[in-house]
Length: 300
Image (cartoon, rainbow, N blue to C red; front, top):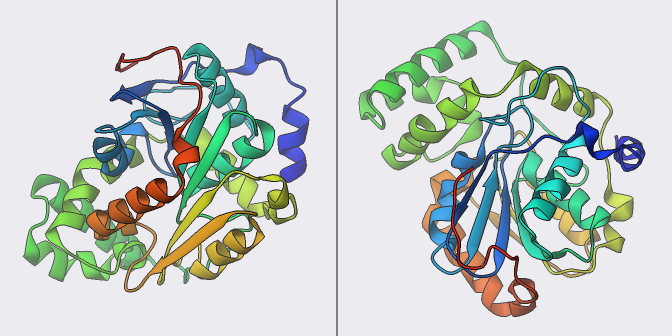
């Protein structure tokens, strides 16, 4: 898959997609990249907080949300779309925050455009992602469907959490089955899942089968990085996130106990506090030439 990224750099901009993007706040730009399934709105746990001090840019990646695309595409096309987005918004330099798949794209963007990426915040992701997720049974899918529908209709209801939620696949995505976490699932996870195209899923599955690994290139990334992980993450293990942090030149790694892949929805206040502290310790990550958008905030 790493070779695939290199090959795509030779393609023309004719393959680019004009991404739907949510822009909030003013100040230094922070590009927020969602995971799979996901969309820009599913990054609100970060954007609503960070937009109080910075300008957050949260696109729907190709094949996700409102960034519709017909036909198959390689994962590397996301990089072309993101570079085009930065050009369109006249963003010369930005901090990149990526969750899961978004974190992989954040690292690839830093490798491709080092002069434009001032820092990385990597959430539940890895340069050599490894999973220890157990096999999925029909009962898992049944309970997940029931829990999701009820939670969508009545977010965070305790009896649904206890009866269906803890028996569903949610048990591998979260560890803290609180009403707040289930409200995030209802408001953001379900809509994102429904708006994720089959082509986007197919593209990710091909990348997983290709055993993506960019560890060997991480030494080229010189900007400061914050790597955060959930200790019980079954989708991208904490060990693989730690391995990523160890290969980055300037990184800080933190692992949260009793949390899983969706830990920003389990312990949002702690995660945001740690991000704020890291930014305070690395002011160079949010300084530089601002994008031409200046004080404008918009949704496209």
